[in-house]
Image 1: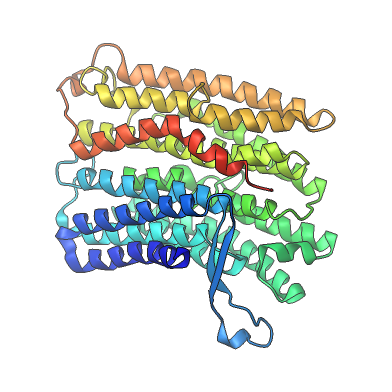
Image 2 (image 1 turned 45 degrees about the vertical axis):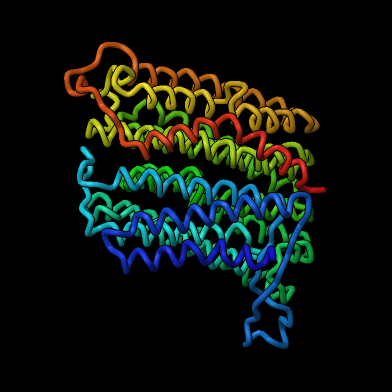
Length: 486
């Protein structure tokens, strides 16, 4: 039963993608139904496998018989995979729902005709399917296949408008993330050559020096995918994508795949050298601070949120590194941050999408006093800001608290140094994000935005669900992350 549900959860978005090509202008309902069923199946799968680790291997690679005599492709559903499923599929559903209102000829920023619906929903639903396959991958080979599919989908969606800026951004994204894919493939080749296995656990069979080398190869792949310094510049440029795609890309998909790889690798329990973990932690802190420095020169709301995403992915990798340094609480906090950040950042991106839909601009300097005409959007944006910056009792407070508590359990000066830097970043980020929020939504409206706006119902429903998610995410994720490593 569980295997059948997992297969169906993967097949449904693919079927929806194919229907999108066939249905053309009428594709929106089919996309919404297939993703809604997939989301329901993801929730059912999480509940039915709670507290267990379910693995079902289904398919061989025929030409590897004699070397690998066990099935290579299948499904792994455990607490870590469940966290990723609860991010990728429900937010995928909300992205489809929001898109039904956003992707129309009434969009003030980017009017889109029905002739483009099929192409858009095909790549979006394939993106969701790729994230499902990645989340439940039982080994590195299957993980890599779906990893590459997410790259392909993100390239197509970033380039969706097919103007010069979007085409350049899509090309840059696929080029830079493929740098990481090359390191990922090399790691798999070394692992298979030395162990004749693609299993995550096979990394523990390597000699310690080679194990650290393979781990660093995977880390470089994660840096590229998760837009970490120095491979971060593609993500702000990727804001040329339609805003619902930016929301899914940042909250639940492409970039989360990179940090999920490291969480999956570290949670296997084999020893990683202290130097490799310190490298991961150091680069995460560097990324957090570099991203923060770019906040203050952004006039595009989406680019500001893009740099915020880069910093928060650094938080996840920081938590994973703290786990590798000997504090499991840090690892669990990093995994919890995946789901907490997802719902917080999706709230902010969809708010920006609503603003751009109504006003035709994302420019901070051109927006003022929107709270009067868009009270629901203003409320959601402020909740998103408070949540993503870690104000209790909202989502990211709990994950940041776990990461910092884990850091304080480390011996020597490492823990206090991490806590000091993170708290400084948190305070500055909170102050700046709150300043931007009040600048955009409070005060006297500018002439350009004085007209009262009534965003479509689908947008408002999306924002309401995500506001609930900003409160509920840690309470859903906490029981799952407590099971990791047990």
